[in-house]
Image: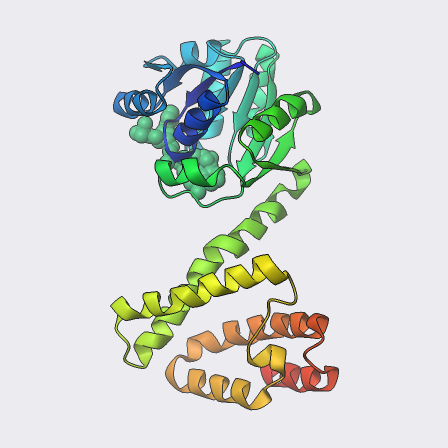
Length: 290
Ligand SMILES: NC(=O)c1ccc[n+]([C@@H]2O[C@H](COP(=O)([O-])OP(=O)(O)OC[C@H]3O[C@@H](n4cnc5c(N)ncnc54)[C@H](OP(=O)(O)O)[C@@H]3O)[C@@H](O)[C@H]2O)c1
């Protein structure tokens, strides 16, 4: 503990990490961001660290350096610091992207620094929400073996849970997060459009579906997979599924293919749950393939 850290990129993730780590005993040295106002604001909120307008001095000031810029700026930012020998020997340089490997920080090795990616599996829309949501979240670690112990200490200080990811598995790992987060938003958007198609206002549509989403999340938490699955496919209700496909074909035919693809995947869940008889599963599959 009591290790020093610096933040480059004073956005939602950087600021929330800074706020939490300072309260767990880590020493924040400096924050650099593209706009000085963001760095100043973050230092004020955290209550420690100096806003800096020198990215190299910021990186050189600490044993752990978080580069929490948007993904596309992580590599160039690291390269610019490394080119000016800005990392101390033995520094741990971390980025928090789920999509990118630690290798985008490769240039930091020229300063004999260690590199890692440490990705919170969480959807963080604003700083205060991020401060509440990071504790208890899982963090996917990928990077140097020499970085693992310090990263584990960080995750434990954040009251997070640890997942270790092999470098080559990062794209699939991140695709999992996209399915579980971004595509859930897309599915809700489709639900809203369908309700609008039957005359329900957009203002009512999302609030009407949100309790369903929350109930489903609660079922997943309580019962897990596959037990949390409910609905016509879990029950083997072929007639209802047929009516859905007919109605979609009439009103929103562009959604039929997606409905069928998701339906086929849902058959597997129903079979695992044991509520869908295999013979009915075959008939449903024929419906979706047609
Ligand atoms: N948000 C999420 O849900 C989430 C979840 C998991 C992981 N992540 C990862 O966390 C990282 C940060 O995401 P975020 O959501 O915190 O992004 P963000 O809120 O957009 O913050 C990024 C910050 O970096 C600053 N910045 C931009 N370019 C810069 C540069 N070249 N040099 C220095 N600072 C620069 C920004 O500009 P200003 O200085 O102008 O303010 C901003 O304050 C990303 O790698 C992202 O993939 C995000």
